[in-house]
Image (cartoon, rainbow, N blue to C red; front, side, top):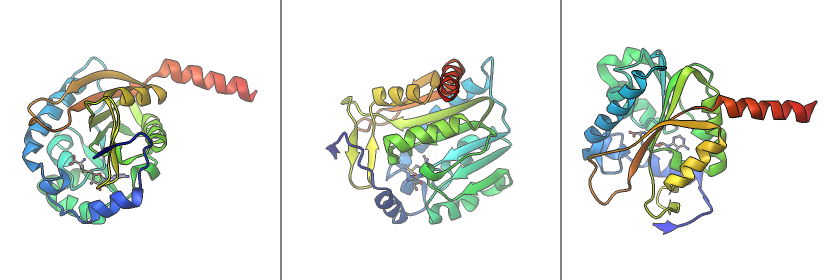
Length: 238
Ligand SMILES: C[S@@+](CC[C@H](N)C(=O)[O-])C[C@H]1O[C@@H](n2cnc3c(N)ncnc32)[C@H](O)[C@@H]1O
């Protein structure tokens, strides 16, 4: 692991890395399959507080981004939503999703075999769940992607980001899978830039020592600032 600030991410290299990983929970969690139940438990508590808030999102359609074999789709999203769409570029993972989800596979919606930097969601999502995947995108692509997600939310829709963050306060590059682990501050800066407002955040509990801290963020469009920006654009164009 080396520290690096240039986000020199190589998309082909990360796809190649995942192409060699078996389609199992342990595989998608990089050998940390044993943390899956604590992870889902933390996510479940977080999601429940969002769904029982004063202005909850609907529970029609969720989107699981960088879904792997559908671990989150099956264990977290399907129990709460009528339909779950997934985005996953790796062919072997996406082909494994139906079987992994098993008896509730009728709730699976569209399976998009595409990378997030190319994905253009249509406007219908109540919750968009991004977990352990945003480190594969460059800053520029991440910002453009989050803006597309923001604009694809239904009324009261929420984007959830659940990611590792560094303790050093700086980003750290992983050359094995060509990913970057960002700091807490860097995520906050990116969310602000994308005109996304944090309505809830929480540190994942009950994870083993020695791994990165993991944070969950619930983000909604910051309509006040979006409006200001749009007005600004009109003024410039008129
Ligand atoms: C650490 S796994 C996490 C899988 C799933 N989110 C989970 O928590 O079980 C990372 C996943 O991101 C996918 N991935 C890698 N680069 C991606 C990209 N640019 N766009 C979308 N998905 C990507 C990989 O194929 C892999 O399925």
